[in-house]
Length: 275
Image 1 (cartoon, rainbow, N blue to C red):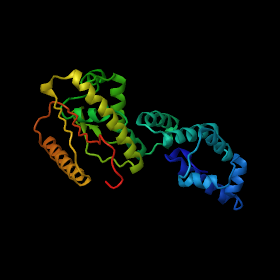
Image 2 (cartoon, helix red, strand yellow):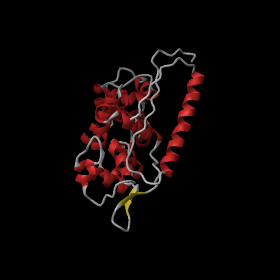
Image 3 (cartoon, rainbow, N blue to C red):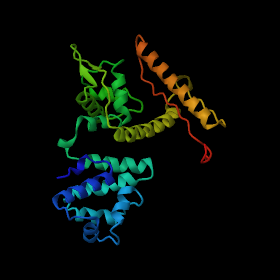
């Protein structure tokens, strides 16, 4: 049986479902599937797998029925289609949250839970807070240390996740502390997760204008005309600055606050095909 809850690409899932049917019955073909699902052409499924065409909601339900998916599997598959075809980050976030809720708890691997590390901005912030705040279990106080503040329930969820991932632990004195742990989320997951996280950081940056005095924040902007080659050099410089900042943070003798430092570079004009 194909475990559909492990998939995050509906095309790969459909390919594996078809191959599973083919193993059960060597005579199973695109033509047989087309007849069962009500496709006009036997070649439609091949075009779908290759990305030459997309899947409508109606066709998604027909395929779910053709592959004999159970109701909960059908819900996951249809949501997966909507997730993959979503055009905006907001849409993807909405369908991603539903996918996570539909996944059975026992199927969540360590890598999948590490994906959740990027799910909320305050997960990462709370891990960093432990460098300068002695947390021993008072979630109400922990929640109030963040700006904007979160709820005690959210603070507890963050600690629970971080501890389960081995990213924090209790020391002999009963306080939580950071543990150096790599996030080994698969590339497909990690790329999407970081996009969601960066999207949240944009909102935090906007809120900072109303929350913090100018002396406590640093915002600078540049608008320049450059070449593709110059942009690559700018990226390299930004990467080097990020490494320098991380080194400064690691060597700080006594941390007393957590900062979010963002670098944003994006086009304001159309880019030619040859650039």
